[in-house]
Length: 391
Image (cartoon, rainbow, N blue to C red; front, side, top):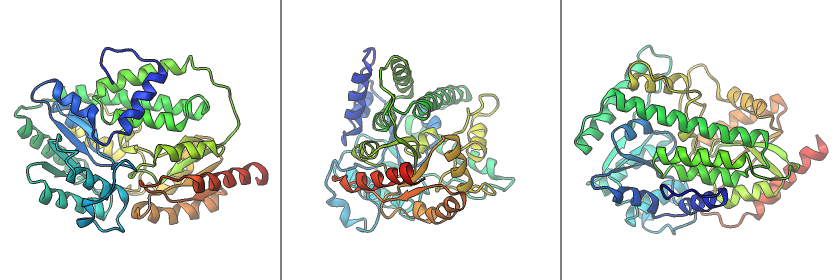
C-alpha cells in the first residue's frame, strides 16, 4: 500500500489481493528497502507476540505458506508428502530464496510438524535467527504468567541483540496500543460481516486482513479505517443466504477462490477462525503496569479459543457453541486443512457437541494446492438447501 495515497474501496481491495497473491513479499521488501537498517521477522501461524517485534523496530510479517502460487519441488527432500501443505510450501519459499530478505523467523507449537520445522530451518538457514516460542501449557499453574513473561523477555532480548538497541517499557506500550487499535478495527469489520454480510464478502474481508500481515501496523490501521469509512457509503442490495461459521482453518489458510465458491453457493460466512493469531485477544491488552506481564496475562486470560493451546477448565466446544449463537449462525462448516492433526482431533469433540446441541454442520477438507472448487460449491449448496427446506 503506497503511503500518502488515498484509494477508493475498490482500489484498496485490488491492492490487498495483489499483496495476498504475491509469494515474493514485495510489499514487505519495499518497506525494508525504504530506510537503511530496517529488519523483518517472519511469523509462522498461529499466534506470535507481534507487539514485541514491533516495539523492537522490526516488521512482523505473516509467513503462511504459498497457496497454489508456487510448485512444491525442493521441500520434498526435507518434508514428507503426508505433512500439511503449509509446512511444505513455507519451506519451499525458504529454499527458493523468497524469504532471504527476512532477518528472523518465529515458529510455534501448533503441531508436531510445525514444532519440528524450527529445527529444519536452523539446519538449512544457519545465518537466519530462528526462534521457537515456548508457550505455556499448564494454564492453571500459579507460575504461568511469570513463565510466559520470561519467555517474552527472552524473545525481546534476542531481538535487541539483532538490532543493537534496547527497548523500554514506553516503546512496548506504544506497540501494544497500536495493535489494540488494529484488533478493534478488525472487530468492526467482523461486526459488519455479522450484521450486514452482503455489504462485504468474506473474500474481500479476508484479502484485507491477510494484506495487513505484510504491512506496518500503522499503515494497516489507516487502511482499515479507510475501509470502514468506505463501507458506510457502499451500496449493496441485501440478499438471502444461510449464515454459517467456518471452523478449523486457523493455521493453513484457504484459497480466496474457495471463500468465493462458498458464498456463491448461498452461504454468508459471518464468523471464522482465519488468521486468528492476528486478532488473538478478546478486549484490549492493558497499558498500565509492566507491558510484558500484561501481554503474558492476556495470553492466559484474554485470548480466543483455539485448537493449538490448552485452556485449563475452558472447554473449546462450548466456546464454539457460544460463537455460533453470538453470530446468529444457522450452521457450522468444519473446514480443516488436509492432514491438520489439531483440527481433526478437535472435530471429534466439536461433532459430538454440535449433535447434542442440534447445530447443523458440514465437514470438508481443503489444501493449499486446490485449484478446482466445484466440489466445495456442490457440498455447500446441498448443505444450504438442507437448512432452507428441511429445517
